Amino acid sequence: MPFPPSRVDDPSARKPTISKKHEIVIFSSTAIALYGYDQGMMSMINTNRSYLRTMGIAESSPVVGIIVSIYYLGCAVGAVVASIWADRKGRKPSISACLVTGMVGNILMFIAGLSPSGSDPWGGAAMAFMMAGRVILGLGVGGIDAVIPVYSSELSKDGARGRALAQEFQMNIFGLLMAFSINLGVTVALGKDNQWAWRIPIVVMQAFPILLISIINKLPETPRWFISKERKQDARKALVDLHGEVKAEDMLDELHRAHQEESEENISYIDMLWPSGGQFHPTMLTVMCQVNQALTGYGAVSVYGPQIFELLGFGVRDAEYVTLGNYISYFLMMTLAWMTIDVLGRRKLMVWGSVGLASCFALLTLFGGLSVDVSHVSILAVEILGSVTLFIATAIFGICWLATVWLIPTEIYPTGARAQGSSVSVILWGLCNFAITLLTPIMFNNLKYWLFLVFAATNAFAGWWTWQYSPETGGRSFEENQEFFVSAQTDESWAVRNVDGGKFLNMPRKDTVDAEGGKGSRAETTPLLASPTET
Image (tube, rainbow, N blue to C red; front, top):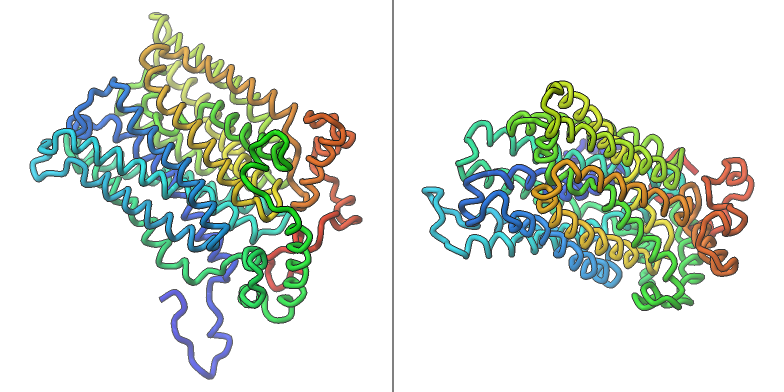
Protein backbone atom coordinates (compact mmCIF):
# COMPACT_ATOMS: atom_id res chain seq x y z
CA MET A 1 0.00 0.00 0.00
CA PRO A 2 1.47 3.39 -0.98
CA PHE A 3 -0.26 5.20 1.93
CA PRO A 4 -0.35 2.85 4.96
CA PRO A 5 -2.96 3.45 7.67
CA SER A 6 -1.89 5.94 10.28
CA ARG A 7 -2.63 6.21 13.97
CA VAL A 8 -5.66 8.30 14.88
CA ASP A 9 -3.70 10.33 17.43
CA ASP A 10 -1.03 11.34 14.90
CA PRO A 11 -2.59 13.70 12.29
CA SER A 12 0.74 14.37 10.59
CA ALA A 13 1.13 10.67 9.86
CA ARG A 14 -1.98 10.78 7.69
CA LYS A 15 -0.21 12.87 5.05
CA PRO A 16 0.97 10.83 2.06
CA THR A 17 4.72 10.41 1.77
CA ILE A 18 4.53 11.27 -1.94
CA SER A 19 2.82 14.51 -2.93
CA LYS A 20 0.17 14.60 -5.64
CA LYS A 21 2.55 16.70 -7.71
CA HIS A 22 5.22 14.01 -7.65
CA GLU A 23 2.69 11.24 -8.29
CA ILE A 24 1.65 13.03 -11.50
CA VAL A 25 5.26 13.48 -12.63
CA ILE A 26 6.06 9.80 -11.93
CA PHE A 27 2.93 8.66 -13.74
CA SER A 28 3.54 10.83 -16.81
CA SER A 29 7.20 9.84 -16.96
CA THR A 30 6.41 6.13 -16.78
CA ALA A 31 3.80 6.49 -19.53
CA ILE A 32 6.29 8.25 -21.82
CA ALA A 33 8.79 5.44 -21.14
CA LEU A 34 6.51 3.09 -23.10
CA TYR A 35 7.59 4.70 -26.39
CA GLY A 36 11.27 4.38 -25.58
CA TYR A 37 10.85 0.77 -24.50
CA ASP A 38 9.49 -0.24 -27.91
CA GLN A 39 12.46 1.31 -29.72
CA GLY A 40 14.99 -0.49 -27.54
CA MET A 41 13.02 -3.71 -27.73
CA MET A 42 12.87 -3.93 -31.54
CA SER A 43 16.49 -2.93 -32.13
CA MET A 44 17.77 -6.42 -31.22
CA ILE A 45 14.67 -8.45 -32.03
CA ASN A 46 15.31 -7.46 -35.66
CA THR A 47 18.55 -9.49 -35.64
CA ASN A 48 17.29 -12.51 -33.67
CA ARG A 49 17.47 -15.56 -35.96
CA SER A 50 14.60 -17.35 -34.21
CA TYR A 51 12.40 -14.30 -34.73
CA LEU A 52 13.33 -14.06 -38.41
CA ARG A 53 12.60 -17.78 -38.95
CA THR A 54 9.27 -17.49 -37.13
CA MET A 55 8.25 -14.57 -39.31
CA GLY A 56 9.61 -16.33 -42.40
CA ILE A 57 11.88 -13.47 -43.51
CA ALA A 58 15.58 -12.84 -44.10
CA GLU A 59 17.58 -10.28 -42.07
CA SER A 60 18.15 -8.17 -45.19
CA SER A 61 14.49 -8.32 -46.23
CA PRO A 62 12.59 -5.00 -46.38
CA VAL A 63 9.82 -6.75 -44.43
CA VAL A 64 11.98 -6.28 -41.30
CA GLY A 65 11.53 -2.54 -41.69
CA ILE A 66 7.83 -2.89 -42.51
CA ILE A 67 7.15 -4.75 -39.25
CA VAL A 68 8.94 -2.01 -37.31
CA SER A 69 7.44 0.91 -39.20
CA ILE A 70 3.79 -0.22 -39.30
CA TYR A 71 3.70 0.47 -35.56
CA TYR A 72 3.99 4.18 -36.34
CA LEU A 73 0.91 4.10 -38.56
CA GLY A 74 -0.98 2.75 -35.57
CA CYS A 75 0.45 5.60 -33.50
CA ALA A 76 -0.89 8.16 -35.98
CA VAL A 77 -4.41 6.75 -35.84
CA GLY A 78 -4.26 6.29 -32.08
CA ALA A 79 -3.31 9.94 -31.62
CA VAL A 80 -6.47 11.10 -33.42
CA VAL A 81 -8.81 8.76 -31.56
CA ALA A 82 -7.23 9.42 -28.16
CA SER A 83 -7.26 13.21 -28.56
CA ILE A 84 -10.95 13.19 -29.50
CA TRP A 85 -11.69 10.98 -26.51
CA ALA A 86 -9.55 13.20 -24.26
CA ASP A 87 -11.54 16.29 -25.22
CA ARG A 88 -14.93 14.58 -24.89
CA LYS A 89 -14.48 12.25 -21.92
CA GLY A 90 -11.39 13.55 -20.16
CA ARG A 91 -7.63 13.15 -20.18
CA LYS A 92 -7.64 10.26 -17.69
CA PRO A 93 -10.24 8.02 -19.42
CA SER A 94 -8.40 8.47 -22.70
CA ILE A 95 -5.08 7.47 -21.13
CA SER A 96 -6.67 4.40 -19.50
CA ALA A 97 -8.16 3.23 -22.81
CA CYS A 98 -4.78 3.65 -24.50
CA LEU A 99 -3.04 1.57 -21.82
CA VAL A 100 -5.49 -1.31 -22.26
CA THR A 101 -5.11 -1.12 -26.05
CA GLY A 102 -1.34 -1.25 -25.75
CA MET A 103 -1.57 -4.34 -23.54
CA VAL A 104 -3.65 -6.18 -26.14
CA GLY A 105 -1.17 -5.34 -28.91
CA ASN A 106 1.76 -6.45 -26.78
CA ILE A 107 0.12 -9.83 -26.06
CA LEU A 108 -0.48 -10.43 -29.77
CA MET A 109 3.20 -9.77 -30.48
CA PHE A 110 4.26 -12.11 -27.69
CA ILE A 111 2.17 -15.10 -28.84
CA ALA A 112 2.93 -14.71 -32.59
CA GLY A 113 4.24 -18.11 -33.74
CA LEU A 114 4.55 -19.38 -30.16
CA SER A 115 5.27 -23.10 -29.86
CA PRO A 116 7.07 -25.37 -27.34
CA SER A 117 9.77 -26.32 -29.82
CA GLY A 118 10.42 -22.80 -31.05
CA SER A 119 9.71 -23.80 -34.66
CA ASP A 120 6.97 -22.08 -36.64
CA PRO A 121 3.82 -24.19 -36.89
CA TRP A 122 1.69 -21.11 -37.57
CA GLY A 123 2.77 -20.47 -41.15
CA GLY A 124 1.77 -17.00 -42.28
CA ALA A 125 -0.39 -16.54 -39.19
CA ALA A 126 2.70 -15.69 -37.12
CA MET A 127 3.41 -12.70 -39.34
CA ALA A 128 -0.26 -11.69 -39.23
CA PHE A 129 -0.30 -11.74 -35.40
CA MET A 130 2.95 -9.78 -35.22
CA MET A 131 1.73 -7.13 -37.66
CA ALA A 132 -1.63 -6.83 -35.91
CA GLY A 133 0.11 -6.58 -32.56
CA ARG A 134 2.43 -3.86 -33.82
CA VAL A 135 -0.49 -1.80 -35.14
CA ILE A 136 -2.62 -2.23 -31.99
CA LEU A 137 0.36 -1.44 -29.75
CA GLY A 138 0.88 1.67 -31.86
CA LEU A 139 -2.74 2.71 -31.34
CA GLY A 140 -2.20 2.64 -27.59
CA VAL A 141 1.25 4.23 -27.44
CA GLY A 142 0.36 6.89 -30.02
CA GLY A 143 -2.66 7.86 -27.96
CA ILE A 144 -0.54 8.07 -24.82
CA ASP A 145 2.02 10.23 -26.59
CA ALA A 146 -0.76 12.59 -27.69
CA VAL A 147 -2.55 12.94 -24.35
CA ILE A 148 0.22 12.72 -21.73
CA PRO A 149 2.00 15.96 -22.80
CA VAL A 150 -1.36 17.75 -22.64
CA TYR A 151 -2.17 16.26 -19.25
CA SER A 152 1.26 17.21 -17.93
CA SER A 153 1.41 20.72 -19.41
CA GLU A 154 -2.06 21.63 -18.10
CA LEU A 155 -0.76 20.88 -14.61
CA SER A 156 2.60 22.70 -14.94
CA LYS A 157 3.56 26.31 -14.48
CA ASP A 158 4.81 28.39 -17.45
CA GLY A 159 8.39 28.71 -16.22
CA ALA A 160 8.82 24.96 -15.74
CA ARG A 161 6.81 23.37 -18.58
CA GLY A 162 9.99 22.48 -20.45
CA ARG A 163 11.71 21.06 -17.38
CA ALA A 164 8.70 18.86 -16.55
CA LEU A 165 8.39 17.43 -20.07
CA ALA A 166 12.16 16.98 -20.49
CA GLN A 167 12.23 14.99 -17.24
CA GLU A 168 9.43 12.82 -18.62
CA PHE A 169 11.40 12.25 -21.80
CA GLN A 170 14.44 11.27 -19.78
CA MET A 171 12.23 8.41 -18.67
CA ASN A 172 11.55 7.78 -22.36
CA ILE A 173 15.26 7.10 -22.74
CA PHE A 174 15.20 5.02 -19.57
CA GLY A 175 12.56 2.85 -21.27
CA LEU A 176 14.79 2.49 -24.33
CA LEU A 177 17.79 1.63 -22.13
CA MET A 178 15.78 -0.85 -20.06
CA ALA A 179 14.48 -2.66 -23.15
CA PHE A 180 17.87 -2.87 -24.82
CA SER A 181 19.54 -4.07 -21.61
CA ILE A 182 16.97 -6.85 -21.14
CA ASN A 183 17.26 -7.72 -24.82
CA LEU A 184 21.04 -7.90 -24.70
CA GLY A 185 21.03 -9.86 -21.45
CA VAL A 186 18.68 -12.59 -22.65
CA THR A 187 20.43 -12.74 -26.04
CA VAL A 188 23.83 -13.29 -24.40
CA ALA A 189 22.32 -15.88 -22.06
CA LEU A 190 20.12 -17.77 -24.54
CA GLY A 191 21.57 -16.98 -27.97
CA LYS A 192 20.08 -15.57 -31.14
CA ASP A 193 18.45 -18.91 -32.06
CA ASN A 194 16.27 -19.10 -28.95
CA GLN A 195 12.66 -17.86 -29.22
CA TRP A 196 12.64 -16.64 -25.59
CA ALA A 197 15.50 -14.25 -26.35
CA TRP A 198 12.98 -12.14 -28.28
CA ARG A 199 9.71 -13.05 -26.52
CA ILE A 200 10.87 -12.14 -23.00
CA PRO A 201 11.65 -8.48 -23.86
CA ILE A 202 8.22 -8.19 -25.48
CA VAL A 203 6.21 -9.52 -22.54
CA VAL A 204 8.20 -7.50 -19.97
CA MET A 205 6.69 -4.41 -21.58
CA GLN A 206 3.39 -5.35 -19.90
CA ALA A 207 4.81 -4.11 -16.60
CA PHE A 208 4.39 -0.50 -17.73
CA PRO A 209 0.62 -0.45 -18.46
CA ILE A 210 -0.14 -2.70 -15.48
CA LEU A 211 1.66 -0.28 -13.15
CA LEU A 212 0.04 2.77 -14.74
CA ILE A 213 -3.49 1.37 -14.64
CA SER A 214 -3.02 0.52 -10.96
CA ILE A 215 -2.32 4.14 -9.99
CA ILE A 216 -4.27 6.28 -12.47
CA ASN A 217 -7.43 6.35 -10.35
CA LYS A 218 -5.49 8.11 -7.58
CA LEU A 219 -4.57 11.02 -9.86
CA PRO A 220 -6.67 14.13 -10.59
CA GLU A 221 -8.29 15.04 -13.86
CA THR A 222 -7.06 18.44 -15.04
CA PRO A 223 -9.18 21.28 -13.63
CA ARG A 224 -8.92 23.00 -17.03
CA TRP A 225 -10.77 20.10 -18.66
CA PHE A 226 -13.47 20.11 -15.98
CA ILE A 227 -13.98 23.84 -16.56
CA SER A 228 -14.15 23.31 -20.34
CA LYS A 229 -17.09 20.92 -19.69
CA GLU A 230 -18.72 23.35 -17.22
CA ARG A 231 -18.17 20.92 -14.34
CA LYS A 232 -17.20 23.62 -11.88
CA GLN A 233 -17.67 21.53 -8.73
CA ASP A 234 -15.45 18.75 -10.07
CA ALA A 235 -12.83 21.35 -10.99
CA ARG A 236 -13.03 22.77 -7.48
CA LYS A 237 -12.62 19.30 -5.95
CA ALA A 238 -9.54 18.66 -8.10
CA LEU A 239 -8.02 22.00 -7.09
CA VAL A 240 -8.72 21.36 -3.41
CA ASP A 241 -7.08 17.95 -3.76
CA LEU A 242 -4.00 19.62 -5.25
CA HIS A 243 -3.76 22.84 -3.25
CA GLY A 244 -6.25 22.98 -0.39
CA GLU A 245 -9.33 25.11 0.23
CA VAL A 246 -7.61 28.50 0.44
CA LYS A 247 -6.08 28.56 -3.02
CA ALA A 248 -8.75 26.52 -4.77
CA GLU A 249 -11.45 29.21 -4.92
CA ASP A 250 -9.22 31.89 -6.44
CA MET A 251 -7.75 29.49 -8.97
CA LEU A 252 -11.22 28.19 -9.87
CA ASP A 253 -12.53 31.67 -10.65
CA GLU A 254 -9.47 32.47 -12.77
CA LEU A 255 -9.77 29.25 -14.77
CA HIS A 256 -13.47 29.90 -15.31
CA ARG A 257 -12.81 33.42 -16.64
CA ALA A 258 -10.11 32.09 -18.97
CA HIS A 259 -12.50 29.47 -20.33
CA GLN A 260 -15.21 32.07 -20.97
CA GLU A 261 -12.73 34.14 -22.97
CA GLU A 262 -11.72 31.13 -25.09
CA SER A 263 -15.16 29.51 -25.51
CA GLU A 264 -16.31 32.14 -27.99
CA GLU A 265 -14.28 30.38 -30.70
CA ASN A 266 -15.13 26.77 -31.61
CA ILE A 267 -11.95 25.17 -32.93
CA SER A 268 -12.13 22.15 -35.23
CA TYR A 269 -9.60 20.17 -37.24
CA ILE A 270 -10.71 22.16 -40.29
CA ASP A 271 -9.62 25.37 -38.52
CA MET A 272 -6.25 23.75 -37.93
CA LEU A 273 -5.63 22.16 -41.33
CA TRP A 274 -7.30 24.57 -43.79
CA PRO A 275 -5.08 27.50 -44.91
CA SER A 276 -7.75 30.05 -44.03
CA GLY A 277 -8.35 28.52 -40.58
CA GLY A 278 -7.51 30.43 -37.44
CA GLN A 279 -5.13 27.73 -36.16
CA PHE A 280 -3.45 26.85 -39.49
CA HIS A 281 -0.17 28.65 -38.73
CA PRO A 282 0.43 26.95 -35.34
CA THR A 283 -0.53 23.63 -36.94
CA MET A 284 2.07 24.06 -39.68
CA LEU A 285 4.64 24.87 -37.00
CA THR A 286 3.64 21.67 -35.18
CA VAL A 287 3.91 19.67 -38.42
CA MET A 288 7.35 20.99 -39.28
CA CYS A 289 8.66 20.43 -35.76
CA GLN A 290 7.99 16.71 -36.15
CA VAL A 291 9.24 16.61 -39.75
CA ASN A 292 12.47 18.28 -38.71
CA GLN A 293 12.94 15.96 -35.74
CA ALA A 294 12.56 12.99 -38.10
CA LEU A 295 15.11 14.58 -40.43
CA THR A 296 17.70 14.50 -37.64
CA GLY A 297 17.84 10.74 -38.27
CA TYR A 298 17.56 9.66 -34.67
CA GLY A 299 14.51 7.49 -35.20
CA ALA A 300 16.83 5.27 -37.24
CA VAL A 301 19.66 5.43 -34.69
CA SER A 302 17.33 4.45 -31.82
CA VAL A 303 15.73 1.50 -33.62
CA TYR A 304 18.77 0.28 -35.58
CA GLY A 305 21.54 1.22 -33.12
CA PRO A 306 23.65 -1.96 -33.43
CA GLN A 307 23.51 -1.85 -37.24
CA ILE A 308 24.67 1.78 -37.15
CA PHE A 309 27.78 0.82 -35.15
CA GLU A 310 28.45 -2.08 -37.52
CA LEU A 311 28.82 0.52 -40.28
CA LEU A 312 31.76 1.90 -38.28
CA GLY A 313 33.54 -1.46 -38.34
CA PHE A 314 32.33 -3.18 -35.16
CA GLY A 315 31.47 -6.86 -35.06
CA VAL A 316 27.89 -7.85 -34.19
CA ARG A 317 28.34 -8.45 -30.43
CA ASP A 318 30.74 -5.52 -29.97
CA ALA A 319 28.25 -3.28 -31.78
CA GLU A 320 25.55 -4.38 -29.33
CA TYR A 321 27.73 -3.59 -26.30
CA VAL A 322 28.71 -0.18 -27.67
CA THR A 323 25.04 0.54 -28.41
CA LEU A 324 24.24 -0.19 -24.76
CA GLY A 325 26.96 2.27 -23.73
CA ASN A 326 25.48 4.87 -26.08
CA TYR A 327 22.03 4.46 -24.52
CA ILE A 328 23.46 4.80 -21.00
CA SER A 329 25.16 8.03 -22.07
CA TYR A 330 21.91 9.13 -23.76
CA PHE A 331 19.96 8.67 -20.52
CA LEU A 332 22.51 10.53 -18.39
CA MET A 333 22.88 13.43 -20.83
CA MET A 334 19.11 13.99 -20.80
CA THR A 335 19.71 15.60 -17.40
CA LEU A 336 21.18 18.55 -19.30
CA ALA A 337 17.98 18.75 -21.36
CA TRP A 338 15.74 19.55 -18.41
CA MET A 339 18.41 21.82 -16.92
CA THR A 340 18.67 23.97 -20.08
CA ILE A 341 15.31 23.89 -21.87
CA ASP A 342 13.72 26.60 -19.70
CA VAL A 343 16.98 28.61 -19.52
CA LEU A 344 18.18 28.67 -23.14
CA GLY A 345 14.76 28.16 -24.73
CA ARG A 346 13.40 25.76 -27.34
CA ARG A 347 14.44 27.62 -30.48
CA LYS A 348 18.11 28.08 -29.57
CA LEU A 349 18.49 24.44 -28.56
CA MET A 350 17.00 23.15 -31.81
CA VAL A 351 19.03 25.44 -34.10
CA TRP A 352 22.37 24.73 -32.46
CA GLY A 353 21.42 21.08 -32.09
CA SER A 354 21.01 20.81 -35.87
CA VAL A 355 24.40 22.42 -36.41
CA GLY A 356 26.02 19.95 -34.04
CA LEU A 357 24.24 16.94 -35.54
CA ALA A 358 25.07 17.92 -39.12
CA SER A 359 28.74 18.22 -38.15
CA CYS A 360 28.72 14.86 -36.35
CA PHE A 361 27.11 13.02 -39.26
CA ALA A 362 29.56 14.57 -41.70
CA LEU A 363 32.40 13.21 -39.53
CA LEU A 364 30.70 9.81 -39.34
CA THR A 365 30.60 9.70 -43.15
CA LEU A 366 34.37 10.19 -43.14
CA PHE A 367 34.94 7.52 -40.47
CA GLY A 368 32.64 5.07 -42.24
CA GLY A 369 34.56 5.58 -45.49
CA LEU A 370 37.87 5.01 -43.74
CA SER A 371 36.54 1.84 -42.14
CA VAL A 372 35.16 0.32 -45.35
CA ASP A 373 37.25 1.71 -48.23
CA VAL A 374 40.73 2.45 -46.84
CA SER A 375 42.60 -0.73 -45.95
CA HIS A 376 45.70 0.70 -44.25
CA VAL A 377 43.79 2.78 -41.69
CA SER A 378 43.62 1.41 -38.14
CA ILE A 379 40.14 -0.04 -37.62
CA LEU A 380 40.48 0.46 -33.85
CA ALA A 381 41.15 4.19 -34.32
CA VAL A 382 38.12 4.53 -36.59
CA GLU A 383 35.93 2.61 -34.15
CA ILE A 384 36.99 4.82 -31.23
CA LEU A 385 36.64 8.12 -33.07
CA GLY A 386 33.38 7.05 -34.70
CA SER A 387 31.92 5.89 -31.39
CA VAL A 388 32.85 9.13 -29.61
CA THR A 389 31.26 11.13 -32.43
CA LEU A 390 28.06 9.07 -32.36
CA PHE A 391 27.89 9.34 -28.55
CA ILE A 392 28.18 13.12 -28.88
CA ALA A 393 25.54 13.19 -31.62
CA THR A 394 23.16 11.16 -29.46
CA ALA A 395 23.68 13.53 -26.53
CA ILE A 396 23.05 16.55 -28.76
CA PHE A 397 19.80 15.06 -30.03
CA GLY A 398 18.59 14.26 -26.52
CA ILE A 399 19.41 17.71 -25.15
CA CYS A 400 18.24 19.76 -28.12
CA TRP A 401 15.57 17.89 -30.07
CA LEU A 402 13.90 15.07 -28.16
CA ALA A 403 11.56 16.96 -25.81
CA THR A 404 11.35 20.36 -27.53
CA VAL A 405 9.16 19.32 -30.46
CA TRP A 406 6.67 17.65 -28.11
CA LEU A 407 6.56 20.69 -25.85
CA ILE A 408 5.87 23.35 -28.48
CA PRO A 409 2.39 22.10 -29.50
CA THR A 410 1.29 22.20 -25.85
CA GLU A 411 2.33 25.88 -25.65
CA ILE A 412 0.89 27.45 -28.81
CA TYR A 413 -2.78 26.40 -28.84
CA PRO A 414 -5.71 27.59 -26.71
CA THR A 415 -7.15 25.06 -24.25
CA GLY A 416 -9.89 23.95 -26.65
CA ALA A 417 -7.36 22.89 -29.28
CA ARG A 418 -4.46 21.72 -27.14
CA ALA A 419 -5.27 18.00 -27.30
CA GLN A 420 -6.00 18.27 -31.03
CA GLY A 421 -2.68 20.04 -31.57
CA SER A 422 -0.82 17.31 -29.71
CA SER A 423 -2.62 14.68 -31.78
CA VAL A 424 -1.47 16.40 -34.99
CA SER A 425 2.06 16.29 -33.58
CA VAL A 426 1.82 12.55 -32.89
CA ILE A 427 0.25 11.88 -36.32
CA LEU A 428 3.18 13.55 -38.05
CA TRP A 429 5.62 11.82 -35.69
CA GLY A 430 4.04 8.49 -36.63
CA LEU A 431 4.08 9.14 -40.38
CA CYS A 432 7.63 10.50 -40.38
CA ASN A 433 9.00 7.64 -38.30
CA PHE A 434 7.09 5.17 -40.45
CA ALA A 435 8.98 6.51 -43.44
CA ILE A 436 12.35 6.68 -41.67
CA THR A 437 12.21 3.21 -40.12
CA LEU A 438 10.88 1.71 -43.36
CA LEU A 439 13.59 3.30 -45.51
CA THR A 440 16.55 2.92 -43.16
CA PRO A 441 17.14 -0.83 -43.74
CA ILE A 442 16.94 -0.21 -47.49
CA MET A 443 19.43 2.65 -47.18
CA PHE A 444 21.69 0.43 -45.03
CA ASN A 445 21.85 -2.12 -47.82
CA ASN A 446 22.39 0.38 -50.63
CA LEU A 447 24.12 3.47 -49.24
CA LYS A 448 26.22 1.94 -46.46
CA TYR A 449 28.14 4.71 -44.67
CA TRP A 450 26.84 7.35 -47.14
CA LEU A 451 23.65 7.19 -45.08
CA PHE A 452 25.43 9.45 -42.58
CA LEU A 453 25.90 12.12 -45.26
CA VAL A 454 22.16 12.05 -45.99
CA PHE A 455 21.48 12.72 -42.32
CA ALA A 456 24.04 15.55 -42.31
CA ALA A 457 22.13 17.24 -45.13
CA THR A 458 18.70 16.74 -43.55
CA ASN A 459 19.95 18.17 -40.25
CA ALA A 460 21.20 21.25 -42.08
CA PHE A 461 17.72 21.78 -43.53
CA ALA A 462 16.05 21.22 -40.14
CA GLY A 463 18.30 23.83 -38.52
CA TRP A 464 17.68 26.41 -41.27
CA TRP A 465 13.89 26.00 -41.14
CA THR A 466 13.84 26.25 -37.35
CA TRP A 467 15.99 29.41 -37.38
CA GLN A 468 13.73 30.96 -40.00
CA TYR A 469 10.22 30.06 -38.84
CA SER A 470 10.10 28.62 -35.30
CA PRO A 471 9.33 31.19 -32.55
CA GLU A 472 10.63 30.96 -29.01
CA THR A 473 7.72 29.74 -26.87
CA GLY A 474 9.53 29.25 -23.56
CA GLY A 475 8.95 31.53 -20.58
CA ARG A 476 5.62 32.82 -21.93
CA SER A 477 2.02 32.05 -21.04
CA PHE A 478 -0.20 30.17 -23.47
CA GLU A 479 -1.93 33.42 -24.47
CA GLU A 480 1.34 35.27 -25.05
CA ASN A 481 2.49 32.57 -27.43
CA GLN A 482 -0.75 32.88 -29.37
CA GLU A 483 0.06 36.59 -29.87
CA PHE A 484 2.88 35.52 -32.21
CA PHE A 485 0.41 34.07 -34.68
CA VAL A 486 -1.85 37.12 -34.49
CA SER A 487 1.15 39.37 -35.15
CA ALA A 488 2.34 37.12 -37.99
CA GLN A 489 -0.99 37.61 -39.73
CA THR A 490 -0.83 41.37 -39.18
CA ASP A 491 2.78 41.58 -40.39
CA GLU A 492 2.04 39.19 -43.29
CA SER A 493 5.10 37.07 -42.57
CA TRP A 494 5.88 33.76 -40.88
CA ALA A 495 9.61 34.55 -40.55
CA VAL A 496 10.28 35.05 -36.83
CA ARG A 497 12.59 38.04 -37.31
CA ASN A 498 9.81 39.90 -39.17
CA VAL A 499 7.04 39.30 -36.62
CA ASP A 500 6.41 41.92 -33.93
CA GLY A 501 9.90 43.38 -34.36
CA GLY A 502 11.61 40.03 -33.70
CA LYS A 503 10.13 39.78 -30.21
CA PHE A 504 9.89 35.97 -30.41
CA LEU A 505 13.47 35.34 -31.50
CA ASN A 506 14.54 34.76 -27.89
CA MET A 507 13.22 34.02 -24.41
CA PRO A 508 11.57 37.03 -22.74
CA ARG A 509 13.75 38.92 -20.31
CA LYS A 510 12.98 38.03 -16.71
CA ASP A 511 12.62 41.66 -15.64
CA THR A 512 10.01 42.19 -18.36
CA VAL A 513 8.04 39.12 -17.31
CA ASP A 514 8.18 40.13 -13.66
CA ALA A 515 7.14 43.70 -14.44
CA GLU A 516 4.23 42.81 -16.70
CA GLY A 517 3.21 39.59 -15.03
CA GLY A 518 2.39 38.12 -18.41
CA LYS A 519 -0.18 39.50 -20.81
CA GLY A 520 -2.47 36.49 -20.54
CA SER A 521 -5.00 35.85 -17.84
CA ARG A 522 -3.63 34.68 -14.52
CA ALA A 523 -5.44 31.39 -14.95
CA GLU A 524 -2.97 30.33 -17.60
CA THR A 525 0.08 31.46 -15.63
CA THR A 526 -0.93 30.05 -12.25
CA PRO A 527 1.23 27.04 -11.31
CA LEU A 528 -1.37 24.31 -10.83
CA LEU A 529 1.32 22.03 -9.43
CA ALA A 530 2.90 24.61 -7.15
CA SER A 531 4.02 23.45 -3.77
CA PRO A 532 2.28 24.87 -0.68
CA THR A 533 5.08 27.43 -0.22
CA GLU A 534 4.67 28.85 -3.74
CA THR A 535 2.23 31.60 -4.61
